[in-house]
Image (cartoon, rainbow, N blue to C red; front, side):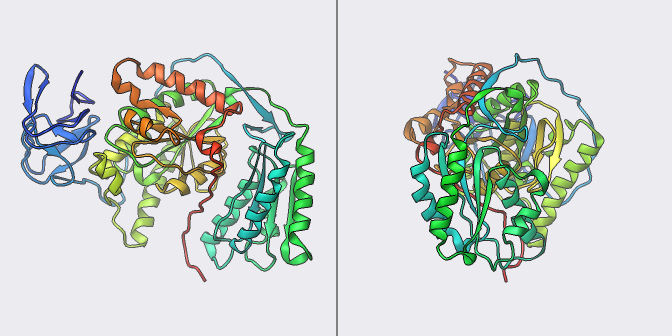
Length: 494
């Protein structure tokens, strides 16, 4: 079995598949390469001499520059590589016009809503307008579990610390996020729970829902009733009663919207889990479905790949704004655009943001980019969409759900138990993580390194699993009862 993997023929580094000790001899390209130091799995080994300030190439693209002369067999990581990223840039559109192979249409068993949308869950949601009523929402969630069954699949309270003491764009974003969440088709019933004196009160949220309000939407303002628990529980029972008649029916896979996210990555993420997700994305898009790629800072260094796949010049220009606006956000807060990946990413073998980005964008597959969404903007175009949101796992996953994702595919090389407002499937980049964290990992893409299964076969398997989850099968975080909400905070707190 190979000990190292050169991802692209232009690469001057390879990924170490098994830990190497100093002096280990590796057969590569008809020659013997000797490890000059211990190198952990997932990290990079130099394949040829690399001069100081020369580009380090991985995935066929630069991931940084050597800070010193590097010899074949050297460990290439944060100690001898620096980023090549800089501030806002001018870009040219060089369209590639990618096309996808045809895949046969598939179906799943979902819920058809009266407004024409499709849900993959029939849950009863409690959404606070403000953090002051979080404890009431949690208490209601506990008490309302008695309604589960007979149509109600789960009761979820989505608590958060916002809704008051906010200003301007920051306050508006919170209001829009909560409004969009109330409209999500995975909810068969929604109680919007307000306090009564907050900036983002019930009526502010309703005004941003327009005429799209679902038929099973109710509100309660706690300061306006004598016993908010009694009143709210009665509303929840009534909503649950209305949900009893809901049944799953056959729905085309083209109805599905799936969010794509990665976190706690390692050196294998870009060669196993993310390409497998990319293969799934291509399959769903080919069937007329929709995927959404986010975490803009982790596109830095790979953004031109996405730009050149834009279907139109307008979409290209929106992608340029997506990238440069997020860089401006960094600069406004006096932060470096090229900040290195997290400690977990570095421990897993990722050295620069470009290294992370080139692996991250593998999740987008090869499909054309059909649209670019602002934070909090619902998806309107089928195909591959890009969404403005940070790399933070919980914030980005919430943003995906709010834009309409029925579920999220989350690749990881380090592992995480978190969830989001929608089913959040964890996909491991390596087998050891899948074995070690059986209660977290839903799908093991690390099998690709074993040599017994192909990328295409794993992408087919992942498609099968996604359709099963869309039809009601729980992911592990659902089994544990996890559900989180995290709103992107941008601005002054009064």
